[in-house]
Amino acid sequence: MTDILPQPDCSLKAVCEPLERCCLDRLEEPGSKRPPNTGARLWGRVRSKLLRQKLDPQTVETKNWHTDVIEMNGIKVEFSMKFTSRDMSLKRTPSKKQTGVFGVKISVVTKRERSKVPYIVRQCVEEVEKRGIEEVGIYRISGVATDIQALKAAFDANNKDILLMLSDMDINAIAGTLKLYFRELPEPLLTDRLYPAFMEGIALSDPAAKENCMMHLLRTLPDPNLITFLFLLEHLKRVAEKEPINKMSLHNLATVFGPTLLRPSEVESKAHLTSAADIWSHDVMAQVQVLLYYLQHPPISFAELKRNTLYFSTDV
Image (cartoon, rainbow, N blue to C red):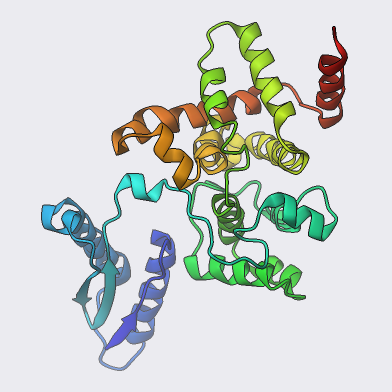
């Protein structure tokens, strides 16, 4: 009997490969008659089981973990599941750690590092552009959770081997680590304070008024937030340039990163959101549109924004 435990957030391919490998190993044993494609068929059963559990009202209502086992041709898959409602999965979840970089204010991190953009952001972006920019579904496909947690711990500890880890790590785990960093900021990159204004600005119908408002909001951001946002913005545009290969359009990237960069902290969100339906039908769509607006905008220069700030402040 062989136990194979799929990691959280792993892909279908990642699960099928070890299952199939196990099948092939067993087929080489004398007297083995296991049918081919057992791994894929077994994982198909697992997926069907997961879907049935997801649709089961009792599973949806309980907050406890449910463990199940599925067996086929001498291979056993044991897995645990717990239903999480959509509104819970969209909440900003800041880390409880007060050291390292995760869950620490971006201004504190950049000051400590004496950098304009946090080291973790620069290194993850560099690695994605080096060997992941043509990866199909980059930033959309989840990395293995244990790999992401390993990278998180390494960045938090300022591990001297972090560059080696990055070069060896699956690119989707690196992309997932970058998303996790922004998601665990104590407040969103575009700040709680400006969140209502971003929601109002993106809803303006007059193009000139919208342009003035959206650019003014960027100028209002703290410098570390603004510089990091512009750095990420240009990176996402370069990723979208490879859309024919990686299938990630500007809209796809805005859908992935919009809520991550704008989702208010829990305290602030209570002032703006009243139900899970409101989160999905209105606020998330607006968050996506805000990021999409900037992604579709001609290149935005930090220096130009600051010159305009000086102009507006001295204009009588």
